[in-house]
Length: 341
Image 1: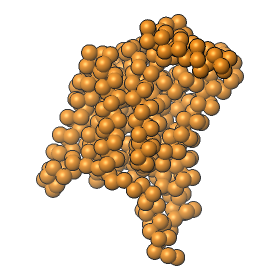
Image 2 (image 1 turned 60 degrees about the horizontal axis):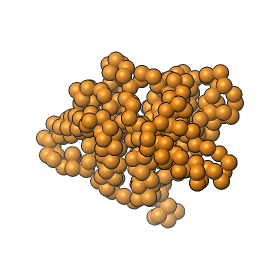
Image 3 (image 1 turned 30 degrees about the vertical axis):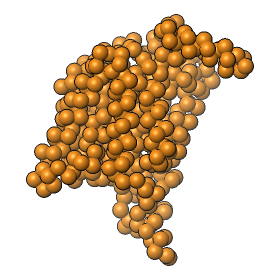
Image 4 (image 1 turned 90 degrees about the horizontal axis):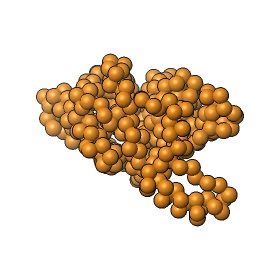
């Protein structure tokens, strides 16, 4: 076995060539663009939520590491990146104090309880989100108002801003006319929602841009998010209309992608090179499981933001997947990646 083969077996994530600092900077940039887009339509509420999470996360990590490392640990940007990802999953109208407490919990109980970056037992942002979601469920009440599958779909088809009418009309007169189709009113608004909701759903265009940038810079294996969205979209098309008494193959894929946190779940999968698994089959398995569980939670368990529960549950399956990888693909005793960074 050559030295290169030995390296690949000992460290099968060497395909990730970018430094931690660069990866975190890209996540920060993409998250910041999404927060800004959402803030433009809510008088800065989204920005207040993001700043509260950012300050709390950075301060908590500094207090935990300053004795041994001074400012070096917070300079890699991982705490700030986790805080912004957490903010994307929070309602834009939530009180910033909840965002700060969730970010502090993410650093203290999730990231550093087992040693910090690379040793955390799940994605810190997801851990912070679950902490807020179950500790203060009323904090999500406003974001969840009117966001059942039936009520929000009805909104999409019956409303539309002036921008939606202009852009939608242009697309219908040009692109869709030649396809023999028509884009219903309201879909353009989904790329920049003005309704109360999680920040990511209010900034669909920015999230898509962020996923594209991270894929372009080869931060991680971009096909993981593509596979996740492909499976999720297929299931949404096939089954998404059934819970409301609809028909097979009649689900709304566009709505499924642009609501319920679907895109930010894909963003987490692509921004985080250690969703747990190291091998291509392992990552593919976790991406498919995320899509299957997310679809089940959202449409059949009526958890509108079921994608987040799904990705968190998949994090819990990571040790088992890593064990199987060591047995099947890598040398016995090769280290397994920790939870998502």
